Image (cartoon, rainbow, N blue to C red; front, side):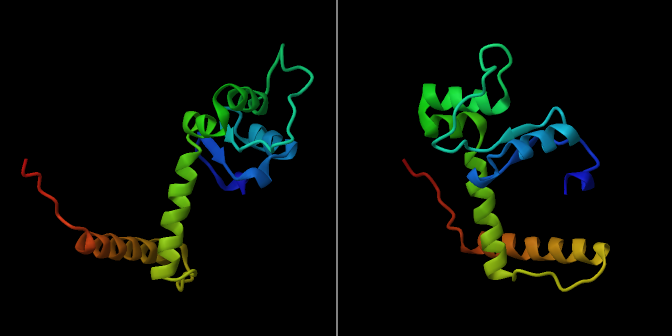
Length: 133
């Protein structure tokens, strides 16, 4: 999948199932400057070279040790993942979990129309608040 990304990749975010050495090395191979934002497992231990050349995972473990898991999530932007999952879930519940078009151009149009319809629906259902004091 990383082969399909033509531009630079800023970060790769995944859940704890992606806490594997293969993931870190594959992302580094395709996009050396990309951050891998994956929560380490609770049983994770730092590498042997943590003092001389810490890996991204080692830095995550150090941050969790210093700030706790929630502090790590805020520091590295892991909380955005939950927001993205909410949006995707909302899209699938309202629009459907599959695209009907067969070509890429038509799929882009289908997604654009669906997103516009969702935004319009949520705009109509959102109250307009005015501060009076």
